[in-house]
Image 1: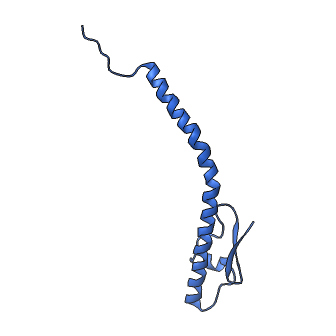
Image 2 (image 1 turned 180 degrees about the vertical axis):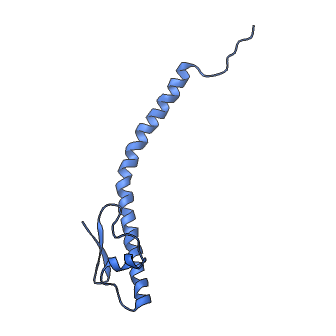
Image 3 (image 1 turned 60 degrees about the vertical axis):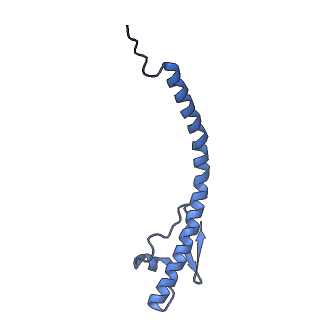
Length: 99
């Protein structure tokens, strides 16, 4: 008679699951280590964007803003906080971070 030999055996399925598990074990810790780096880079980008918006405010109003809340109110920027939790402040026309 005819034998139906299509499909996977239990051992083949277990080997595939083992390989997938090993790949997950390797990649997940690397992703969590890189998240702090990504947040730091995001903060650097936000600082540069905010500095550009301070200059845009100066071009529009011929005066620098007193603080960043003015930029938020007038929709120049949408946030005053970095992804890593630090707050942005405007000191003498320069955008800096504080804890």
